[in-house]
Amino acid sequence: MKTQGDKVIRFLEEFLTLGGSFHGEPFKVLDFQREVINDIYRLDDEGKRLHRTYLLGLPRKNAKTTLAAALGVFHLIADDADKAPVAIAAAGDRSQARLVFDQVRRMIQSNEDLASVCTVFRNEVRCHRNGGTFRVVSADAGLQQGLNPSFVVIDEYHVHKNSELFDALTLGSATRSQPLALVISTAGYDLDSPLGRLYRYGTKVKNGEVHDPSFGMTWHGPADNEEYDVHDPTVWARFNPAWDHFMNQDEFESAHRRTAEAPFTRYRLNGWTKVENSWLGAGVFEALASDRRLEPGEQVVLGFDGAFQGDSTALVACTVDEPRHLEIIGLWERPDDQSAMGWRTPVHEVYAEIVEAFDRFNVVELAADPWRFEQSLASLADEGYPVVEFPTGSVQRMTQATIAMYEAIVDGRLSHNGDAALVRHFGNAILREDNRGSRITKNHKGSTRKIDAAVASLIAHHRAAVWREVEAPAEPQLLVL
Image (cartoon, rainbow, N blue to C red):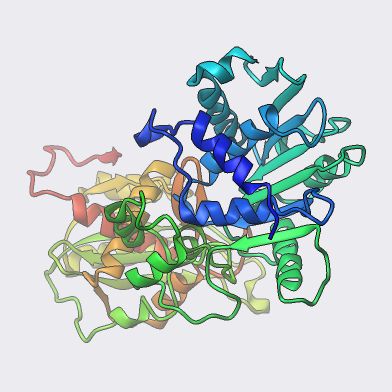
């Protein structure tokens, strides 16, 4: 196989250094990177690059961004396939795109030879040696037309909601001699997404269904329909090519313990999942059902998540002592049939159930989302009941509660009475992840798949975990956390 890979690798190892925890160390191309680079830069019989589009699938923590940046530097400075090269780092948002650009800037500024032929600006690098430029663009900055790139690297394509940026950048290279678009990403959950379509096309090319020498793909992760144990460390090592090189295996174990199965599969194993962020694997919560039942006078925290109409209201008890135990005390759900029209939560019935729970158990506190129940909670506090607000709109608070509950579930430090409604609400919950944190939510706004018993459970469990034996305030009051 003829390849330009040897030239690329020589450049990377001679001129570039690493960042992060390995800051300043020489860029040593690993075996799996060498295989990928040699495949990306395969040559045809005329000595020109064979591939025009290449999809590289890697789990997180396998140096995707570092490799993307290194290849960007090569195409800016050392690639002679096209005159006046235009190299572009593209991503779904500005922050992700700048991760590649910042690595490019660091690599250039860390080497005297490279720095001597380049000028680094805030959003662009210019190479005086060949008139080349390196730019950073993002999908949230609008379409990018007229750039005529010779090299494009698209990082984390799984977050792109459409192919507009990809199309604009790749279709703009028609006048280039040997343009190359490199897509580097972890797996997604929707095979009809832009990444999903590209992945399915690459699979057909690799298995011979489609003949397209211009398209290449390397995918480190589970094969389609492959059976594997997501909890097996040997599986983790098999799907992560950097496992024995620089992977922090303690951190990997920690991520496994606190991350739901679907996102762990996608991000850490590069496996496609059927749903975006199913919070718990099938049967995981059900397996915690036991014969244990709450006893009268047992010390508990009550968690409350209420709705005035159109949804459900849940009151759940969680024991203070470990291993903690959950039971639904009251659940009021909007009916799914015609009787739902005009349905309202029976506020007085809910109030009475809360008071009865205080009589039946040693309730150390009622932790409640106050939405639409402010007056009832204030009345309970005025009557001397220990009430604290737990706003579920607080991302930080819900992230903490979600992580704590997930760890208790996967560690088996939790039980419940097998209530079908509780199991159903936990099964309906999905995980929402963004730069503010991870927390459970419905699959979409307005969904009839209720999760309020799960939310109330998270509230009760979290408050039970942090509760300490202290004297009650001299005057009962509604406490805001």
